[in-house]
Image (cartoon, rainbow, N blue to C red):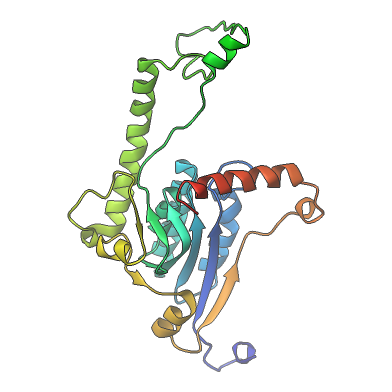
Length: 262
């Protein structure tokens, strides 16, 4: 009740934004449009700091960039430090989000890194041939059937995919270097490797091993007030009317986590 009594000093306030799940422009994943109100609310609360709790295997590089850029813009405007706390994983786009923090803290078993770009699909040309299925495609434009899963993989398609991946990878690397600076070890950290806990500290991808509550008390006092903020489920979801969408999002998240052995 102390914070509601006029003229008495209020305890330090730290909004805690939970960033959990895959990062996607559509479906149930995290995206800039969905998180914008939470991020804006956190920085409008006149906090001493903002904490991010991250548990994400990654996803859309564009949405990762937009979310991180919004956090950094508001942190600069309000002159508020940002602390990122990694739970199970902050890999690929998840680590992009973690780098929005001025300091990154992990658990002993947290997985971080995977600074790379991946394109994955399936190919079915032999299966179709065995089943006697003929693929018929008519296009206007030589690239319209690019990376068709029903046709054999072409060297020129692979080269084009790599050309598309390169600027995305370069943007990711630039973001990490800009945010981590001289804390990064003098070794190749950008080949999509992953590190666990203290190993991530050793290479400079994170700042230390720490958990949210004790670290915030250490930095801002035992009376610090943590204000949890998370995305709310829509009323259709609460009534169980988005089962298919929720199921697909769950499958996507589990597949991406399986990539890191989780």
